[in-house]
View 1: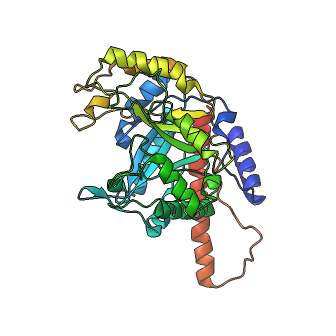
View 2: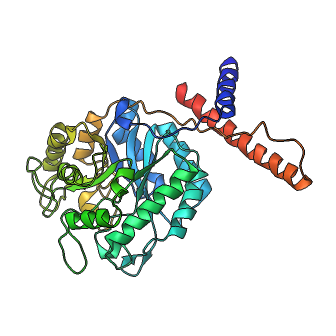
View 3: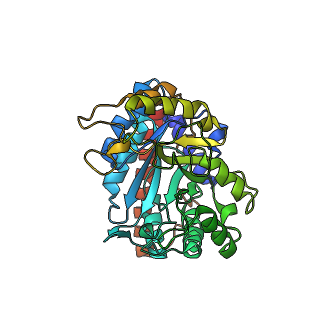
Length: 377
């Protein structure tokens, strides 16, 4: 109880002084870069066994999408609470919804709704990692259109909207398909970035990190020792090209990568992962590598899946586990802000509203305290 009392006093002290938190450099603390890409929150426990080496390591990463029609507070708070228990850092990729063969083009209303929803959740670590949409240099990922200018506007507005609600939101752009070329339904990645910059010259200065889809192209089968803008070290080419637009040092999140087993055996893929992490992905700018995909089941991505049809881990799952370390991220310190100097005189409606807000804030504070105590035990 004495520890709880100290924590409460400390937290209230921070809230009374109005301290505003913000993102921190994830590479400034011990970091477990091992991760995996999920499709559903229910897969977290299985993922944690791989990326945290059965509990011997801690705070690996998972990338997971959330669609606009899936903003369920209970569902996603349960997921984030489970991230605390499993010691996993979530990277949430914001998505719209599919319509026919395309994903609906996002708009500012989507951003506002997502910002309000995600800000109501209690996150496991201080940095709230968010990716805004996916491979937008393909028209089917952006409402059937190709518009780097519009995406630059959307991304710029997202930064304003989310940062207004919390400085802890860590803004990442959509990972691009670096193998795409200038065609009717796609744009080369360099062309796309250049057009974004021409439309919004400050857009890359405003980002908190960089998202890379570092696949072994062509055909997801190329050896890991080969280098190129469409290979597993494509992030290096991204960063080099970005120097034309910003001098800001952006930490890298490889949120999609992997090899297809269409032409490669599981043993070959395991060796490829081992080599990649010891060479290209040992780059000090990399925060996380979350290969695609943990569990494809019978879907079209089975060739990338880390689990077989019997839900057993494939050989290359063990490669990731062996490399996992103990990360030490800054844990969530979100504190409700109380205005103690506010006058106690007001209308009945104001007083009732204040009491309701105070109750909600206290409830949130209690939840945070429980999470914090669980984390330090």
